[in-house]
Length: 117
Image 1 (cartoon, one colour):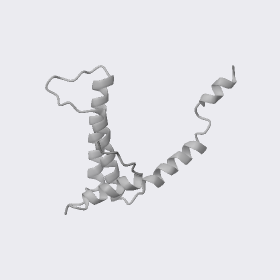
Image 2: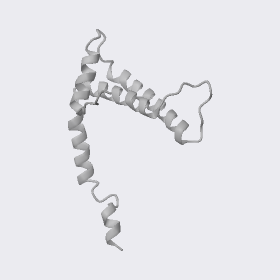
Image 3: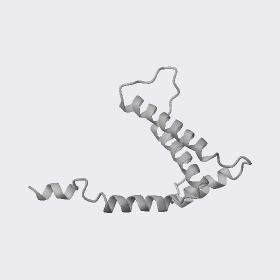
Image 4: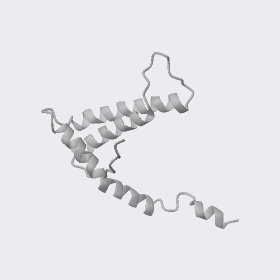
């Protein structure tokens, strides 16, 4: 069995860029990719609803998985970031910094609840 290689966000962005770079059409416009992102998000929502919600699949519906739909969503998100020359690692770091500063006292930390007892 083949061992999985750990990949960084930069590696994922490079893989997607190499894949898209094979085609003359290149990346879709940001607006078209936003539409694709919305479409993929809807497909993920549908799968979540089938597995965890009250709406079971019809017998005629294709078996997709939440994992597959998350992968599709990630691919389109990376395409959008690449087309706009956005480093997803930097974007991630900025968001975590924001959560760790602006929102640092917003939620109850697990270790805080045990101190009160």
